Amino acid sequence: MGERIITARSIKTTLKSDEFRNRISHSWKTSWPMIFIMLFEFLISITDVFIAGMLGKEIQATVGFVSQMYFIFIVIANALTVGTVAITSQIKEGKKDTLGIAASTSLVSAGIAGIFLGIAGIFFTPMVIPYIDVPEKIQALAPPLLMTYAVGLMFHYLLITTNGLLRARKMIRRSLVTMAIICVTNIGFNFLLVFFTPAGYLGIALSTVISVIIGAIINIIHVKGFIMAGLRFSREYLARIVSIGWPSGLLQVGWQVGSAVLFIILGSLPHHSVEIIAAFTMGLRIEAAIFLPAFAFNLANAVIIGNYIGENRHEEAYKNGLATAVIGVTIITVLALLIAVNARRIAPLLSDNPLVINEAVRYIYISMISEPFMAWGIILGGALNGAGDTRSVMKIIILTLWIVRLPLSYTTGIVFGLGAPAIWWSMNASQVVQCCFISRRYFGKKWLYNEKRKTVD
View 1 (spheres, rainbow, N blue to C red):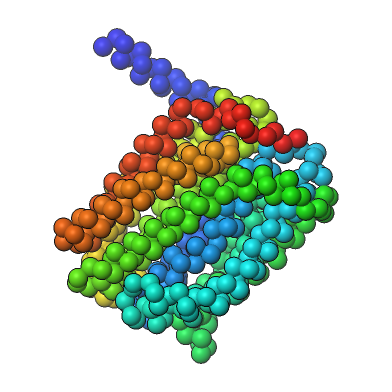
View 2: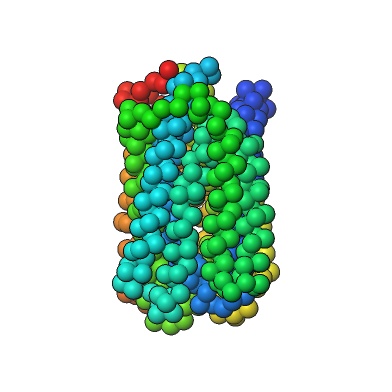
């Protein structure tokens, strides 16, 4: 009993210590702008689903499917940005030439990749979509929508990369302003183009293209200063960026392909497959109110860890990474409870189809149970990314996706005939497994002292 009292007092003292409060304060200072950026992303996403729902369940299901496909096209931008943030966050103040070379290398690479993939998306989408096993109505509606998104791909690449540079160099508030402008522009054009022009449902994609072009231009102006200080393309820096970023890119490809496979599994259900896909699309958008803040803490943690490792303060990096995870999981848990309690009020706002609403609510009830596990794993995964330990994160998430989530979803949902609820529970199981393995890697601390890591001068 006495030992328990001492332990409780020790924990209480730790929580009240100035050192702990300073870590929480530092983590929150870095994280809160990212939360608002993710909020803007959420508002854009939920508006897309809301408008698609007004146009019909087929359009809503198509928007969800195309969103998963489109993310496959931007994985290279995200991968390059992971490498860029890990490197540029470790560059010491005053090294303008070094920063300029790294930044200009990442932007040139992102721009070229965006051009080639945009062209590929425009020309190859009509050939690929017919071979994907989704309902015929979705196959007919998806190609024009995805091709429209592909038009703005280069600008989306530049936007993602410049946002990463601004985060890494502690200029996140400028990125916040850019994303606020994008949010207002995207939502405004969404309603205008869909309901007041001949574009129809394609206006959902056109509004995104217009807004990312505006955002990319604004961000390039923000980062122009330190790019011009050392404007030069460097194969060495590109190799380092790719070395850190490729596992993240492979992870995102695996994840998005896995998500597309999950849509195919849902499309194989014997009853109401279109309604269930629409419900899943709607549920994902509602769940984004939780996932996006968790991802915000993931990105913030990458910067925090990168900054500390650049200063050779490894133990501080480890402790601040945990502090960020504690804040994030606390917030995510509260949000999950709020969404679960209000699911029946939220779902009818995005659809008027009773079957879609009921299945979306059931998805929310089930998925909210695993949200704290999801948040913990994602936020600690961000810390590992910031240290350049992207391979471990990639291996853990890919394995849990392809060994746990998808086989379990197909077996329980299709083979055993337990339907959509079994698929939702299978997703929960994969989140818990993923959380456990990410935690094991983090607490092992090997990522802090990576002998292969090159120090940035």
